Length: 314
Image 1 (spheres, rainbow, N blue to C red):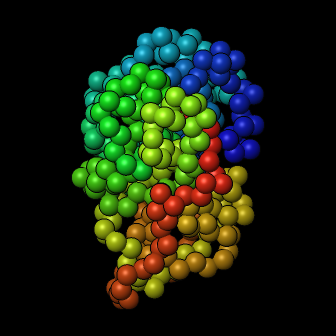
Image 2 (cartoon, rainbow, N blue to C red):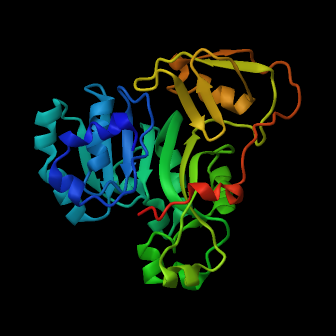
């Protein structure tokens, strides 16, 4: 967890922290005054972290299907409001595959986050379709989850141990790309990817040659091209995002150093110009002159460094 988020944990109620089952904290920067939706919020730990980041002008909506978890979250809502000074968190029981059950209307959310929950859904395409229904134009999906480097066999997908380890429901990364394309996002970006080291002998035996990866992904509700195209554009990060004075990591192959020019493709340019990040960047150039394909240097998940292996996500 980044230091600026870890420092906020001291103001989260102990029961909320103890009964929270997520992995890490997939929380993006520049959230002031935003409406943020947390899918599978559980006891609300991330919601209460987000509450401080969106401030008095923002809203945090937590959705979970489990009433027992939501009861913990709601029980401490007044405690957190008094602690932070913000009464800006709401919790709803509903299904992430059908956010209308939680009353989330079309194009009403600036940012959707989720903490190792998507892999538990039996209907993942519906989840992503719902996310892009509720996001505003230019809105962002930022989440952590477990993915696989090939399709998980049905028998493993139904195995209770594999499911409990957040492995059985892992989506093949290329199927994720295809689903995102179907919901209108042609350029989802991987921010971090680490291969999960399976220490348990029985789980490793079941997994065989399947590689499982803990990944943090961001995607925007924008009309992207299906390839990175070169328009000769240059971007400068201004160093103005709170807690990011020296640089900004858009994804695993775009780290902007404050004040340093970087050539960017048309899609990256749009991510910087047509989202809430726009005030923090200066982009020079437009899309009038085309120079062919742009080499973004996007790494293949299967080539993720083994040095970054970790023991698990959930």
